[in-house]
Image (cartoon, rainbow, N blue to C red; front, side, top):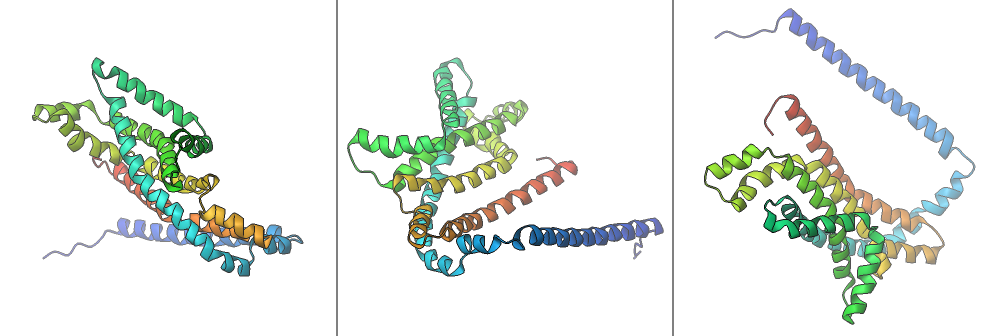
Length: 281
């Protein structure tokens, strides 16, 4: 059995790469120390930092307000979870209608395009006002705030997600459809088994970015009267005359977004690596 041993040139290349890695680590450490020194000199070591710390970063007030803010944050999570399902369903329907072929479906394509144009152009806070205060007035009945929030989020974000999905569907080469139809698959089967899997894989990073934006915007349902994390922070801040509760609410939303952000970065890097290797996506 022959044992392969790397050549001298390969050993030299490996040594060079190890040297580059060590140098990169040292440069990263040095730049981090310089940045920390600049922050300390320009922010923390200033006369007004004590007042800022007392008004925004009071640990005692943070601990006191955390249980109430956490209870409100659970409402935001409830709206987010329900909206994730409804946005996915509505956006997929709109994207399929926009990419549908045939003159008989022209009215549906026009309605789908009008829907995306309307709710992508309308500010989300206006949609909240229209849904949160307009729908109960029209129906002359009391509707749970969670339901109203889910409807508003769905109307707005399904328009964005639908356009992302439409771009993914149209990015699939027409030969894929033709090959599927040649194999005897119908339109729905071709869409479900061939087109959509490739389309979703192509547009997963922008879909994750939309999900991160949706995570933040569910905090605006407080304007409808929901005692969510933002409303709870506002109530605690009005009692303590301190802005620390808002920082606590912001940290909760950041902790919610970080896993999705890191997952998006990992998946984007994985796609880039596969493309550079010439793999078939």
